[in-house]
Image (cartoon, rainbow, N blue to C red; front, top):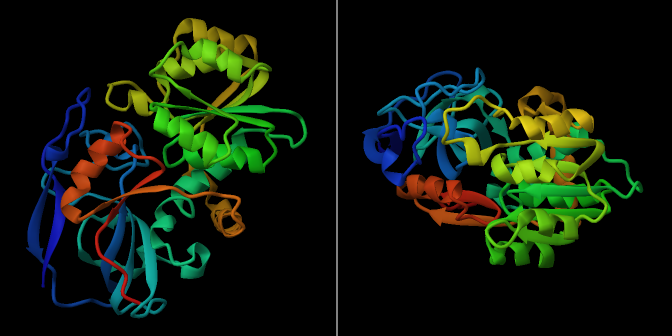
Amino acid sequence: MIIQRVVLNSRPGKNGNPVAENFRMEEVNLPDTVNEGQVQVRTLYLSVDPYMRCKMNEDTGAAYLAPWQLSQVADGGGVGVVEESKHTNLTKGDFVTSFYWPWQTRAILDGSSLEKVDPQLVDGHFSYFLGAIGMPGLTSLIGIQEKGHIIAGSNQTMVVSGAAGACGSLAGQIGHLLGCSRVVGICGTQEKCLFLTSELGFDAAINYKKGNVAEQLRESCPAGVDVYFDNVGGDISDTVINQMNQNSHIILCGQISQYNKDVPYPPPLPPAVDAVLKDRHITRERFLVLNYKDKFEPGIQQLSQWFKEGKLKIKETVINGLENMGAAFQSMMTGGNIGKQIVCISEISL
């Protein structure tokens, strides 16, 4: 059987901006035989995420992330359906997901690398397993639970940067659900600002490309900032940290503004900002969701429940076709998406 796949065509270089041409699509033969313990899957949806920028370098700078190899198939979050199985726990027709799904139309995978998913958790929206009811949702929920120190009823203000993205759009809503009295988002367009306030229930939104961010932040957060969900790093984060209260907390989710630069993760803060951190006893610890696997199952159940109750609104930007993986990745890295960026590879035929 001939299938399509997407491989890493070239590296952008440590300080380069990734482009669609860093990837290429090619046709290959899928083996005819499925061996013991393996399954053949058809890919339904694939995910593109900011952390993948690190995988484009020869060295990711992170022990838990393996770099993609040139001319080898790329991989990431994926969801699909089993077409043939020689694995004891999986049968034809099962829906499965993995963090290491190859960017292919079909694949033969080790059954033990896959997790069976229940369509009822997402009301049949399988792409949600790559977003709100998946890794970004867990990252937002567990990050806030573990590092946010939210105490319901204590009038805390949360600020979210990258607020219209996959994690940010969920984090703000979760902040409210867990007891923050005020949630303010920072994003890059008026359209995104309106989306945050009118659809997701953010109390205010700041367009960092318009006007003075520090002034707008002071207006939006008159009592200062108690919890900061940081997706971007850089100048925006420096501005937020300067307005944080004593004993406040930073949830270090991502640093997308720094991913194209050759700097360690998390990037060091400017000395003046670092001094603010120390003087005000602000916590800023690295957060890695993979360290909390014991919390994944209850987390997924909680996210699904909120979604079904209408308390968690889910937004996606969907591009169709495996050939558009590179374009989707480039767009996501430059803020072209609202909510989770998803690529639809094939339709579900139940």
